Amino acid sequence: VLDLIEDVRAGLLSPPRYLPPKYFYDDRGSSLFDLICETPEYYPTRMEDSLLSRYGQDIISRARPGRILELGSGTSRKTRRLLDACEQLAHTCIYTPYDVCEPALEQAATELLSAYPWLEITPLAGDYHAGLGNLPAVEGTTLFVFLGSTIGNFSDAEANAFINEIRQCMQPGDFFLLGADRVKNNAVLHAAYNDLGGLTAAFNLNVLSVLNRELQADFRLDNFAHEAVFNTQFSRIEMYLVSSVQQSIRLGTLAETIVLEPGDRILTEISRKFLYEEVEKLLADSGLTVINHFEPDNGYFSLVLAQLGCS
Ligand code: SAH
Ligand code: TRP
Image (cartoon, rainbow, N blue to C red; front, top):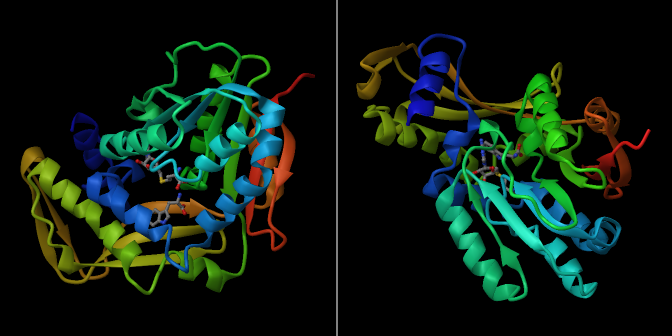
């Protein structure tokens, strides 16, 4: 709650209003995100999953990881493709899912243990921005995994800082597997963040319920509308909650009141869409060299395996 109080003070009390994405993922938020991934409009999950199925064995046989460490693992569903590849190659390893949402982490661990009895799972619950400094040491190489184009939810500076932090934790010979969504037709992008079933809207609005619960606030969800638009200049989806009325919201825990006019917006998420060259540069800027780039025929998504440069 201390983080939340600080973040709300910094972002929500005056315009431009914004919230960090991690607060989406309470128990309900994680379940909603899970449902978004199955909507016909949200193509990234299917794209990435099929790349992991197709190239999982290439990745595992190249990295031969002693540990797979996944940041923001959620349900770990796509990671199963890598574990399947381990099985096919008779390779065993430790899996360390790292996520801020504890219920999701626990459920994933339980399900994975029954599906992969040979797997040793050592979950880490917490905020990966708080530092990756004291990861337990393991035998062999670590394959760091960051899927779902979550990298796109960071600004350029944040993305650089994050990859740099991962790089600092890497030992010589370690690998990094990154999934990043690509620039494409505007209508396809727009649909992916405006599913007709309204799940993305419900997910976006759910962050207000989190504030209500954690900060004794009185946001009325029906006074806000979900808006997701592609900003061509910055090549990113911007997700907003837009006030539909004039309203004042009390934040009990902070002893603050927010006044919003109709049309006032809170930025809740950005989702950047990359050119492949930009992904490569992001990695290169932290001293990581691309070993393999996997993409579908339509170039909708990039799965990139990188390693500490040897130059
Ligand atoms: N990797 C999964 C989930 C992506 S959604 C996929 O590709 O489908 C983003 C995930 O990151 C959620 O599970 C969320 O709980 C987690 N997350 C968000 N911010 C985080 C943070 N600061 N620290 C740790 N986990 C975080
Ligand atoms: N990493 C995902 C993405 O950028 C997160 C996401 C998907 C998301 N749909 C969303 C975040 C809707 C907020 C609202 O695609």
